[in-house]
Amino acid sequence: MSAITRTTRRKKTQRGFSMMQLLIVLAVVSIVSGFAVFGIASARQRIRLTNSSRLLASYVEKARVDSVRRHPSDPNLMAGVEVLNTTTYRVKMDFDGDGTVELRDITLDDGVVFATDPIALVFDWRGRLVDLPLTEIKVSIAMQWGDDPNDQRVVDVTRSGDVTIDSDVYLDDVPNVNVNVNGLTGIDGGSTSNGNNTATPTPTPVPPGEEATPTPLPGVEEDPTPDPGESPTPNPDPDPDPDPDPEQSPTPDPNPTPGDPQPTPTPCTANATTSPSPFTFSKHSGGTVTFSVNPSGNVTYANNPNNPNNLGVTKSGNTFQVSSLNNTRGNFTLTFDTPCGTRTVSVSVTN
Image (cartoon, rainbow, N blue to C red; front, side):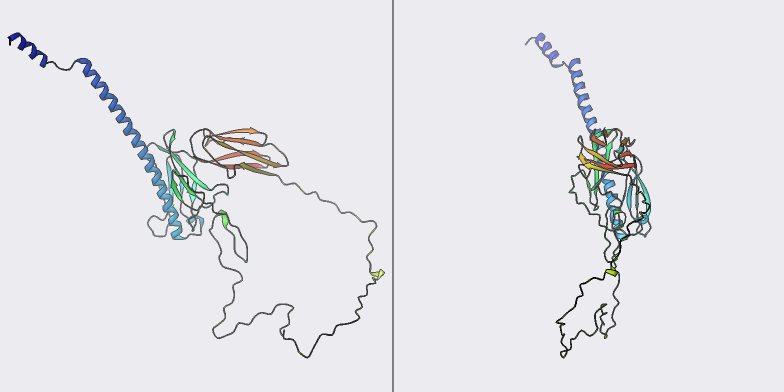
């Protein structure tokens, strides 16, 4: 083999990467790194959002258990959770077990905010929500990452106190009982607190060895045993005296004097009827609110500044079409001005 051939082969084996190959490799590495960084950032957002929702749900469950454990009858001593603003909520319960209720403010993770209106949840001694309107069968507290309504976690609390996260819970509505039978007091404020389970009157206990003496009923003789020697003798000729005495017949006044009639004022009423009832519908759908006013009058919608971008309200007479404008779920309040004063209607937007 000649020297020229050996020199040519040696040069070919010593060739490196071209500039175009290096640029292609750098571009591929940059794209892959960008996707990796974006995926890690999204995963961190979801982890923070999930962590905040689970922490809130755990505090709600702890407050419910604390009310059941301490058995409070005073509403000021009942445990609960209150949403203060878009990033902070307050937990009210006995944290150290000394019988004294303490307050603790919890801040959401960075970037996580509440997507629903501020609300307060209070549990009575049976673990049920207090002061929940009859139209609501559960309370939803939604959280989201920043301003993205598509990335949310929702904590649902039913009337009976069941707590879930991002799930369609069964609607176990607790009836609002209000009775007053035999001295039993009703339920105050839509809850089961301050119930009186003692019947009135209370029977007087009988000491041992003595027999209870029954109380005779009015109009009943104490000796009900009939005498066998006596038998009732019917009167064969009763005289009913059917002839009325004309002197005892009342004579009507030919000129009655009418009294001065007093007009009865008509109360002003403004009743709202929702469809569906309860007023709950899924996102991107809606329902209607119809007012019946007596005496007749016009009803207008007062825009609530807490949810201007979540719900749309269209008026037609005294009927209002309410629609969900985005993916935000939760509980919202609609305010209406009527001739009888201000009326509010609660609406719940679900999945």
